[in-house]
Image 1 (cartoon, rainbow, N blue to C red):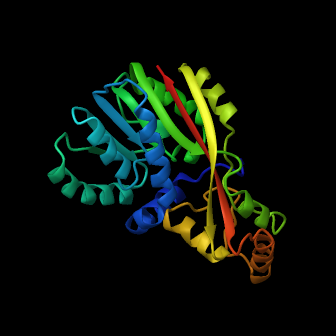
Image 2: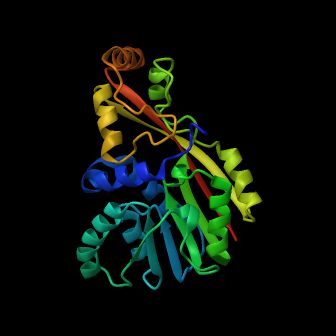
Image 3: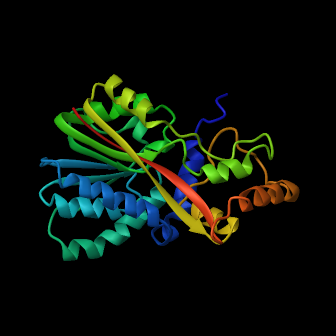
Length: 270
């Protein structure tokens, strides 16, 4: 058994449960999405069909619809609860902005229910870290894209939540965090899937919290549970949790606990 394999059913449940409070907690996700949208300002591309992979509650989907009003935007997410929240939010948006209404598809990006050569722009903001086979996922995205199509995405790199990883280190024999892929390896995967001219870069974003409980609550509110096969089947004991708190407290700076995220950005052409 691969202890880092993602349990997709657990992911689906967690994100569906988090859908109603997601927007209030997903400050970093929206910031990364905004930075990705700014990158589109420097790329000449007029897609007729846009696929938003891991569309969540639809904030990014709506931004793409504004940017490309003539395009059909397809919002795809593994969690039905997220798509239902997005549908509810899209009603007022359609009244304010002209353009095509988004289409909603509940599916796993690792097995897309889309025809080959049917998409001009694939967009994915902080969703690809939930894939078990990233090379195969890129091959699947390449399959559905038209020639001259653009893939643009963000995901988490290996240094994500390094403070929390340190706090859990040695506490017990279970996984407590997902494993993330290095951006250089992602670039190689893109080339292996047949993409041209991949461009990769990264940055660190550090959020600060008053205590460990607030860190964990934020992660739960956006559905970012530990979904690996090596996770514990039960609750952590009080003694083990106390050790986690002590370990994290050693990292407190200026009265706050840091939570660092390594954000990997990439784009490539078919």
